[in-house]
Image (tube, rainbow, N blue to C red; front, side, top):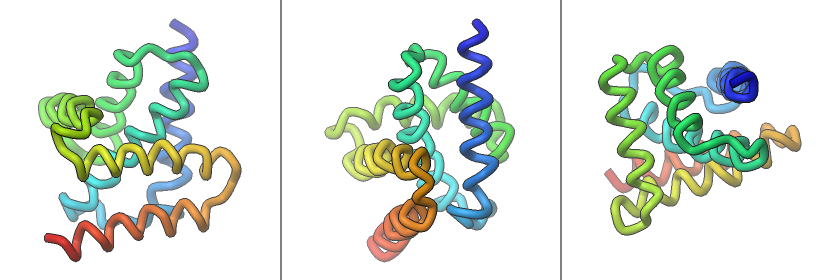
Length: 133
């Protein structure tokens, strides 16, 4: 149980140190929030894999962060986290699948302190998605 609390604290630390300094999203832009959510889901899965955290605990942390940090209602956070889980199947949603995997790579950039590279990677995704829509 303690490892789950530590995992959640590490996830909170990731978002607290990146959301405004590295990712710099418009929290009122739903598309940017969804992209960030998918990217963070990838990052949290990287951390979870490293710490041997169960997938259900990663989902729990994701729901809490979507609710507390990205201002989703609890119901919307649960639905979005399930959508992200479903998106780990490339055939379900290829774009979100790609963003999640970029987030997984982003975790290692974050861990290595490569914040400029992390910011560029994230903003490249935002630019590509916004151009395509």
